[in-house]
Amino acid sequence: MTQRSATNIDLVPRPTTLRRVEHCMGTVFSIEIGAPGCDPLVVEDVIRWLHWVDATFSTYQADSQLSRLGRGELGIDDCAPEVDEILTRCQLLETETSGYFSARAAGRLDPSGLVKGWAIQRASDLLTAAGSANHCVNGGGDVHCAGTAAGGGPWRVGIADPLQRGQLVAVVAGSDIAVATSGNAERGAHIINPHDRTSPIAIASVTLVGHELGATDAYATAAFAMGEDATAWIDTLAGYRGLVVFADGRQWASADFAR
Picture (cartoon, rainbow, N blue to C red):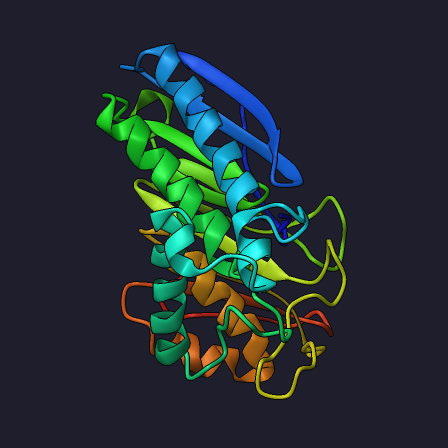
């Protein structure tokens, strides 16, 4: 299962108790844990969790529960409880976004717009429960930062420029934040407007900053699917800040994004 990747954690050198990189879901995950740290075995549990999510929800693996459910080979009761949890949440998100977020946007079962952000959030929660107050989990551009970076300062997350590879359009700094970017820069036109089954071409990327990564990820997907209507919708999202980069290079930021 892959996902758009347009957000990069700004990994400046800093003292950490543990840093781990893992390939999963067709992308790269990084986990950075600061003091006071936690048992390294918990990090292995988190890595196993991420691989379990991939094996269960992958739309690329024919034998995943999600793929088999989509083909009608399994019923929802035959799947892990998390599958029902995700699909139920997708239905709620579809209502909240006026249909712009859909687990069947392209005509087949695919809740990827929620799954990776949800998995990263759960991974962060597992670390927190194990005693890690300060850590960052980054999965292919979806980022959840708990607590603070080294020295008590904010985490810094660079937002990649979708029009100029290797450049940044902004840096988000904060504590206890979730950052998700949606766009077609990395994988081409793969995000679909469920209402007309086309991929928006007027905008290049949408970045949202919130506190819970599952919803932040899904809302970013929905906003991108809205195309030029994304800016007005983002302004209605209480508790979220947004940045939109248009295909012609223009940028729009919500009133409180600078904060």
